[in-house]
Image 1 (spheres, rainbow, N blue to C red):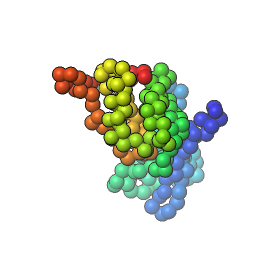
Image 2: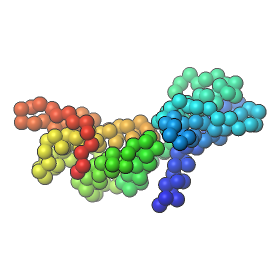
Image 3: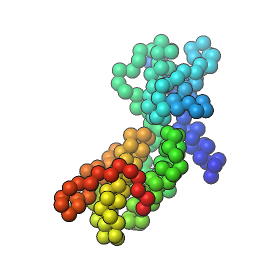
Image 4: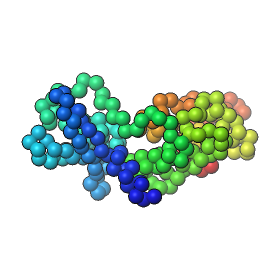
Length: 209
């Protein structure tokens, strides 16, 4: 529902910065209309509200940038190691929740609805091939190869199937992996389609399934 989606968006943009003295300062990321980068809003050391640009348009990188800037604002040393922001736990998500999360992250990154629909169609196609699975974390590299072979056996062209594989690899590595940390591996990495002459196809566009 719209109410649930708004709550999910708020949760994605909230965070806590733990300072060296143990204090935890709440903050909120937000974007102004037509501005692609996130601002971080929090109460400064003087108790007054502050708002600083993270200079990041990706929500996960914006969280990391927000924490670094807050460290400096409160007189702490900047963390030497990259800040890990646990936006989501590593608990496995079911297909429906994972697809909703994918759409939410893409909308927050400014992708158009048609592009997002192409990605969600890819997820639904994968789910149809493996109806016994409960979520994306159960897909293995062997299953990714089975998906490829079944798509070709069903009559899809090699170029279309290669585009499907690249779409799913992007979903696993970038969106469910890098952008929210839900998954650690991409089962579609390196899974390719070989045409008759042995040439590997490479088609980056999202193809409807």
